Amino acid sequence: MSWIFGRKKDQERETSDASEVFSSPGMAIVAERLSRRPGSAVLELGAPSTESLAFLAKNGHDVEVVDLYHSTSPGRSGSLRGLLPPASQLPLPEGEARFDVILMWDLLHYIDPADRRLFGTRLAALAKPGAMLFVMASSSREIPTAPIHFRIEAADRLRYSGLASGDKLPPPRLGARDVEQAMSSFSGERIFQLRNGFQEIILERKS
Image (cartoon, rainbow, N blue to C red; front, side, top):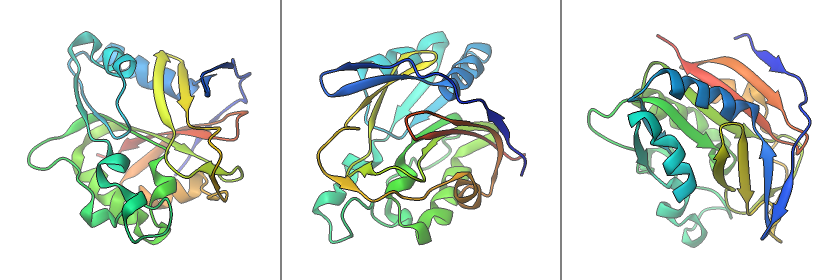
């Protein structure tokens, strides 16, 4: 797999009500894809927001939201703190649904490393050939005990809510190679190292 690396881009940052806004070169690529392909099917795997849904639904896009983390209540399960249930039990869409864009956000941090490949296989089954997958990953910074709530503020800007929560988990040491191994049915396209310690990774479903 070959990657195209983006330069460390100066982060435009705003803080309000325990949330922060950062520039997002990865989301800019997703937005550009959606603008060129009206009527795309989008799978949003994070917590929904009015702003994000309004942005994603433009140009006739069909958006399906599956809030994987909160719909499975991992905090009340018997698993390790913060971890989602096994990938085989996650309530991903069933039937004939296939998507052009999948927004996975930072969910891979909260899946047992031994279970990531099965999760990637299940996502690949939902993706059309050439579908775009957007992933957030961190290798060196601590992460919140629950996934960050990302809201799309603009085509190239995301608001992070929950990033500064009191409780933290150790750095997940999740890098581009780990994402590549988990998402083996996808090919790497672009990776951006952000100044806030996260990587934005864009992959495409292999034909």
